[in-house]
Length: 267
Image (cartoon, rainbow, N blue to C red; front, side, top):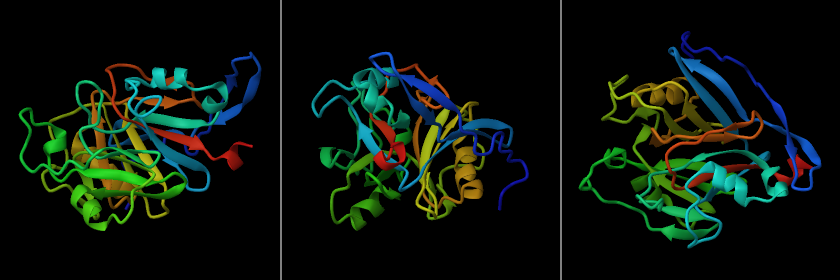
């Protein structure tokens, strides 16, 4: 049931922004997959990746073993003009160590760069990742995207996905809020998350106002109808949306999630 407090500030808002190539020519406008929403007085941005229209990949650095990008600007600057023209959106995508390396399962273009992290005891400096269960966002490039708790993924996985990133905590698990998350706790931060709805669309959310875990989780469950949603990070959360010209900056990042326009859709 969609709550009356939810207001879609701009339904299906598509902003077309020109992209200037390296040679100075102008490419076709890039349509934004993102729109502003308001849930219980909290402003957020909702970005939707659609199978058949978009591809999803993870990105840490220019190549496996390279120094991590650490920012969305560095990701953009490492791309050619043609590559930038296919970017629908990108955002930070999972927990990481001080140097930017992922602390949990991480797969990039079918290459596993980090094993599943199934520790049950909190680390020396417990954080959101230790609020078990945590989870994994994964799938093939052009579809079959999923979010599962780490244990559920480990039990169900039969082959390596094209991309995967482990983060935590889970916000929604099989249609229920994480058992240790209150409906609207006192911890309020700029946060971002991902979930996959019943239509197979990946729904990315980044808040503009500080929000609690509970409010973000209820938005996924009650408004988007997502049965499994995963927290990606807080405080450092950032979005690159070429269609609106948005390029966030701030604290250094780790893994990134990149949503690209399918070649057929871009032609």
